[in-house]
Length: 133
Image (cartoon, rainbow, N blue to C red; front, top):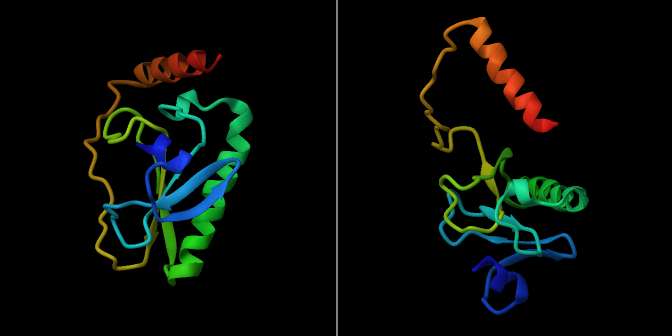
């Protein structure tokens, strides 16, 4: 569906339309003014975004994150992405949600798990570092 919005075949409440991406209002916003930013090419998730597209795409996200509070009188924004899990549309999209103190959003309540030992934590860190190359 996001590819069709980018192409202009599906209507959307566009906020920005640039060579680096398209930004439009989420139709089921957390708060009014919740914007989705998507890259122009179909990219399923953040890990698939080519390095040469990163600066332009995230500059657009940054610009939207600055514009939302300025436009809406919000104090700030919550900026987030889901990759596969909880990703309702299989096209990379970044949420920019307006925030104000006392808005009722309580954040995420994720279960916490302790490492069994420093050795186990070192092992996890090493595996992730190795995957980075």
